[in-house]
Image 1: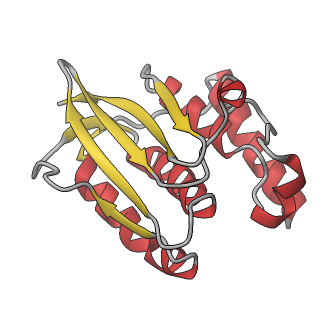
Image 2: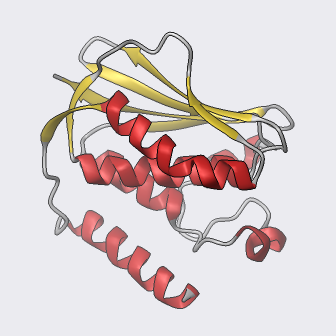
Image 3: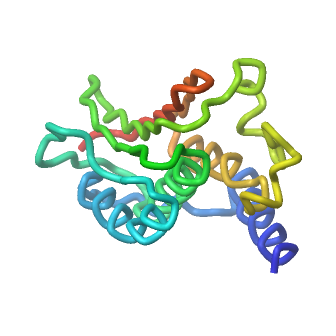
Length: 177
């Protein structure tokens, strides 16, 4: 199963890198998509005693242009990682911020954090901050690479900031409608 997941993930990355994977641009409300993903993630959150929620004051409508299902995958990968690496009883929150022509989407956690020397490699294929824990947390080591490729295929950017012992925030942009 693990080998099959790795092959499938590599296939996704290869398609995105080679331009074979089409971006199906549609207009959609990013907040509604985030709420759907959060609903799906509630069981996983409860299992790890992590609350997943929207940030207070998230505005009622955030219409963006993008591939809704690929952005769902971005949310799934980022929130799953956030839950896996968060402290017991902590919170993962999604926030939305208006920029000039884009919407900034941020996923923040109160997890273990990532040391600065690892941040530049975080989106590399198979990169693990702590390889000795890879079996414990599962995954193929390709999730963040897929996230980066999806966002870049939308001609947008993704970034990460983190403090060890405090938490991590991933932010990415999508074009506003």
